[in-house]
Image 1 (cartoon, rainbow, N blue to C red):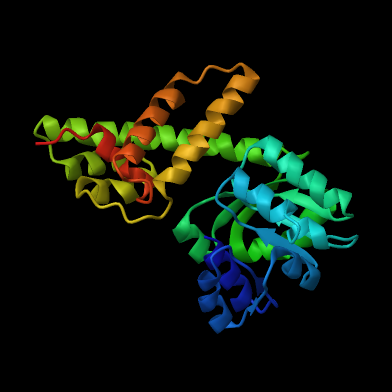
Image 2: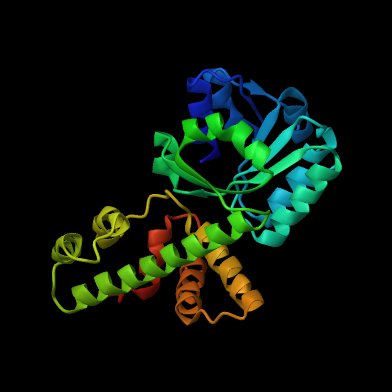
Length: 278
């Protein structure tokens, strides 16, 4: 997703400086016109606004706070926009590191996966420094179709976890329905069409249903990341003393799918945790 977002900025005419923990992943962006930096600190030194897209809380903290990390080059007038999906505590820790160096911080996790990222149709769930949100608005408009400012740091992280918890629970339910239909002797394609025409019509069901029926799970949103988000959402529920029995049950299915070797497959591969094998 980070590649697609950066490429859209390059295509829009912005001067883009990129860095990746796996350097080879920058090659295509360099070919498209981006400058490649050696460290996160070098990116920040070159840019007024730095965006980070990372896989988990540990990566976010490391990239922001390492000796050659983003915070090391932060200064007044510079901003750090973290679009990763993490928990509120991680967002607060990164914000503290950035702000202590004089920079501004905005969390802006995105709703949307590989396709929306490529199409510039992401939804940004932002919180933190309002002035940075306003300054970054033109960049967010290139990469997305909507941006929300939700308040103080942590609000964006919490909103993203709630959204992904709902999505993950819905996908697990869809997998169970498709599997049950097959065991009843029904055509899964008929179920897809029936649901598409009714009150529970859902673009995700229509998009993923046919490939799930075929056992095809080309990754748009890797299952390991969905399970990570379920885990973080459940931890948020514990913190808020909110029972989440459906999400907890869905999380166990994702864990089972991971154990079966589907970590890097699309999150729709949760189907493999419920499908009855012939």
